[in-house]
Structure formats: C-alpha cells, structure tokens
Length: 345
Image (cartoon, rainbow, N blue to C red; front, side, top):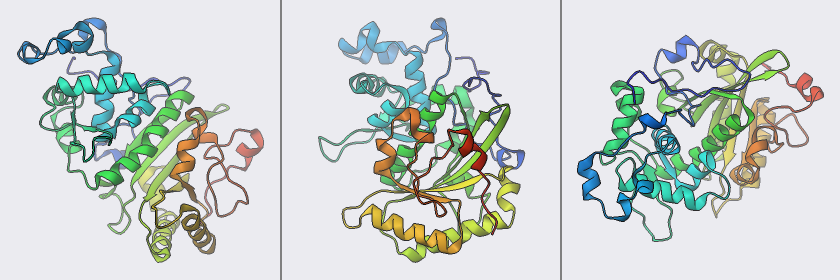
C-alpha cells in the first residue's frame, strides 16, 4: 500500500472533514469513520514467501492467503478499536448471517500474523483479537497507513479487557449505524485522548461527534460515553453528573469541542447481583434533581436489541425531562423542531 494513502470513508451528501476542532486535533487522534479503505486488486497486500512456505497445505490455497479489501478493513478496525471479539467484528463489517465467514477471515488473519488473539480461559469463550508484537504483517500495514508515530501512540497498554470490550460493544454499533445511514462519525476519542483536554477528575469512556444533514443544514452532535459495569454507589453517579454540569455551564465544553450540542450517554450492563433497571432509575432521579437534562440512560441489553439501521433514531434512552423513552436523533419534523440544546440551568 502506498505510504501516502490517507484513510477516510466517503459519506453520501456530506462534506468529509474528519477533523475535530484545532484545539482537539492538536493532539492527533485517529478518525473513527474508516470502516472500509478502497484498495485496487493490483495493490492487495501479499504474504512474504518465508511465512507462506511455513504454512500448511490448507493455508497455502489462494482463498486462504489472499488479503482482500474486507480483510484490510478488519485489520484497520481491530487496530483502531484495539481489541474486539469476533461478534463485534461481525457487527461492524458483516451481515447478521455472517458469523461463519467472520470467524473464517479472523482465523486466517491470525494464522498469517496480520492479527493476534488472546488465549481463552475456557474452550467455549470467544477469541479476542488485537494487534501485538506477534501480528507483524498487520503492524506493518497499519504503520504504512497511519505512520510510525501514530501507530506507537495508539498501541498503548490496555486496561481492563472486559471493560474495553463493553465500550466497543457500543462503538461498533455507532460506527455501523453511521455508515448505514450515510452520516459521518467525525471522530472517536478514547480516555487517553481525553485526559489532556479535561480535568483529571472527569475522564469519560469515550467522546464522539456525529455530523448529518437536516434539510439544508449540517448539524454536529457531541456525545460523552459512560459505561457502568459495576454496582457503584449512587453518590459516585451524582458526583460525575455534577462534574459534567460544571463542564457545560462553564463554557469549557464548547471551547474544547467547538459545538454546544451535548449528550452524556450512560449505558448500564447488568451484573448478576444488581439489576440495571434499579440502577438506571436511581441515576435518572439524580439527573432530574441536579437538572442535568443532557444525561441520558439505557441498558446494554436495550442497545443490543435494536436493529443496526435504527440504532440512532430508536427511542431507547431515558431522559430526565421526558416521560417516555427518546431517540438520539429525531425522525419527524415536530421532533426536529423540539430538538434543542442542553439547558445551562
């Protein structure tokens, strides 16, 4: 692949400016809209003969060794999101019936050292795919695509793998929904990208911006993501909501991210010892009391149950100032007219 190849996905009827405001992009962040990178047939990545000769007869077949455009998209996705299960790769890049094909491509890429995978604790556990020192060919491809400095910066240490995978359950669905709708996922910033921009007391699990056209107007919406896996005290959530309120009221949010539009999306998983509905209702009551109307809540089960094509406009979120569930993006003109910015009160 040519060294000057730039990543990017062309979205329909939309400018493809992938950068966040200058004060954010002064610390380079990988764009989040590259689910697929066009590559000509004559420029497909080939396996070096040394590794090819070491493989068994089955791996030497043309089907097994050909690195397709979709394979390159898989490698790029795993690199950008750092660690993924096979079902998450399927969600992002394959059809609902593509589980076997997803597993075949991932097994092939792992065998050829384009990706690596973590050892499983139990035989029935899913593999977790990532790039490591052993994924030599995938590393080389990503270095060529993004450059050595961006590659090294992005390959930092992973924290809790379970928490990371849960965040990626949300991220792959947002990426796929944007692609299917023809919207632009302009950027996705990770906690390590956000740390220099925000207070050390407020480090979300992610921040992303979505750009879309409403009539003749281009709109940008920003979202912080908070993933709640453990049964924390309600005081912890109250403190977090107060810090988000201060960030918005002070004007720092708009100064940093160059948009006044904000939602804080809180997604609850369901530990066996503490039910999500109770946790959500308690947090919702705190948000009402604090008048943090831009904090919206849902469960991971609700998020996963929504068809990908309607994920962003399906009413699955509970908002402090609404009696019924709401959608992230309105679908009717009445809803569009009522879609206002968060209150500073």
